[in-house]
Length: 555
Image (cartoon, rainbow, N blue to C red; front, side):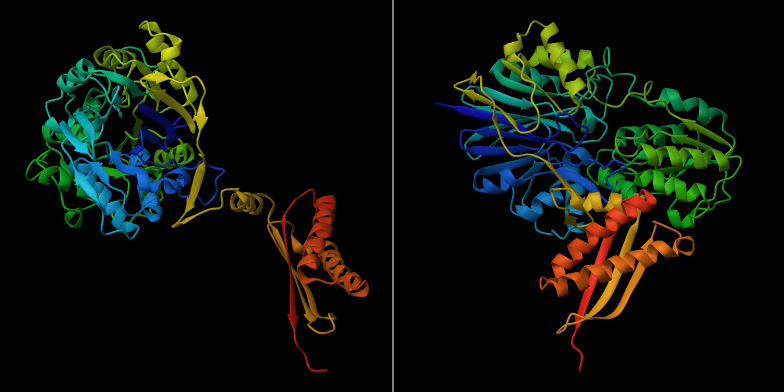
């Protein structure tokens, strides 16, 4: 009897945090390990990654982690995974391996179990046949993965568009291997859903050149263009335009410089000789220059904000500058992008934002998805990677092609699609899933209490009350000292401060008198009484932090 289980630990009904698991009998294969950017209410959170509990509990069965390309939403959670499973075998293409090694080194991992594979290849992991085929997406070296089972291949499409005009092999879409897989038999096809509401093919509307060329033609002063450094397809388009219009290029971001260096070493793309101006040779007075400002997530917007507010040591905006925003906000960065754009209008001569509805992101449109389904001819179709409305739109594409509802599986994170001897079981099993919020190098508690405390501090402030008592007699010998931050203006509210102190003193004295004094219980009781009083007087619910310090004194 063969048993295949397919489920997601992240990436379903959300944008980012992609992580999919395929269990082939007893072997576990992981596809992607990404992050999601926090929204404005998740204060102090750097990133959100999947809950790895299931993988940790079953670590002995893990055979491989496949990372199909170098985007944050599929790769940048892996540093956290390495902290709990450091020896996990990682399979990826050469460019992604370079990026991953740098990322892992930043979080303290120098020894990695990385297997560099070709985009179009066939190999075995243990006794399981693995096939990969190249996909066209916004970063080089992207590929899809097919995992062999007794009942056919389980195929994960990764991100892709169908573009027959791409001449660079590092970006080329491999139709031949896709067709071959379809002929060998596909048990289940997991296809991305981000562009599933977009009519037609994404190509040629993914190209940014038609939207930028007019500005290269008529701009007299400098040009500054923002672009995500992981969107190498777009970076190359911009560099090619600079070459055509004889503009020198200064790459502002070190990470993008490293990526372009990787591209050159691997033979994927070389910046034309003499085109690039080294950062140390850049002059703010130069005119016929293109400055590429890049980054990931909201970091790109913070860099431009620093330039716009004249806090950057290298670049100062001039009224003759043309600034082009070719890095549309991704979920979680909208507020940063809006603030950056507002600041730019105050300083630059001309600001242009590329319309994402006209210059498409490189995700499969409706006709791209139809082509993949047609060539693969899977028995079961599983929409992945997207918000719920996108998953449903993707499912409807398969329905329109004649697939029965029973053969289309729309799941949520944690739900398990189980195929026994090639037949889907009716009942959904489930595994533990959730969000793990990462603050700096540490993971916050899963209950969210840290975030709730931060939200409280940011909205209603805090009151700290300190009292010193004799350790032996419990008599108050110092204080109370009351400090308020972000709650009330002390000069106008002396009576509130005094009453807070009185409540603290009375709580301690009553507890001592009744013979029930406990430091912790007194602080909890005082916190409750003071919170009720402050709410009545001010309408606010600040964080109340009572402190009782017990010291030994000589009689």
